[in-house]
Length: 217
Ligand SMILES: N[C@@H](CCC(=O)N[C@@H](CS)C(=O)NCC(=O)O)C(=O)O
Image (cartoon, rainbow, N blue to C red):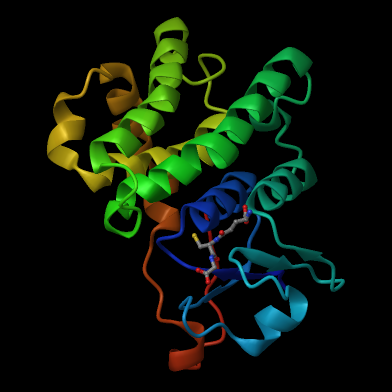
């Protein structure tokens, strides 16, 4: 039986988000672990922009945006609660948060992480810019257990891999930063079965010649 093919990179937060979506949907894929410096030709042929994740469906259609992969998998498997399909207000809030993560927070996260490559401002300045988003999450988590309600949704799974990176830049600072609710939320997701399943290590597809591994629940 053929499966969709997922080109992935274990440590990439976008790829994590896609793998989480597939895992939570219970959608099995043929996972091909890549290294970013040596992208496989078939992946570039399917998606010339050269970013992971890339999902190639059985009929040849290509989904090469992480959020679209989550949405495709969850919709296909009828996971309406995670997608907030029947709660348009919450769905709108979720999409707005993901948009803020991808377009506002992520650029500051990159500068915070690689501050030596961006000497225009100090690392603390970049962190302070990123903290504006973390403070927004803290306020939301003061209202409910997860980002848009008491139940985890696409927003939580799409965003926590990026907050994980932010926390890892300076874990000592993170542990005493004034965001206890975000810290607890992140820890719970990092300890979850889903996250541990999608962080399983695979040999790289090109080096190993091992053609596939399946993400399974
Ligand atoms: N908007 C894309 C962004 C994906 C992305 O930027 N992935 C990074 C890795 S985390 C990448 O593949 N970068 C290309 C490279 O480093 O060569 C998505 O959501 O899928």
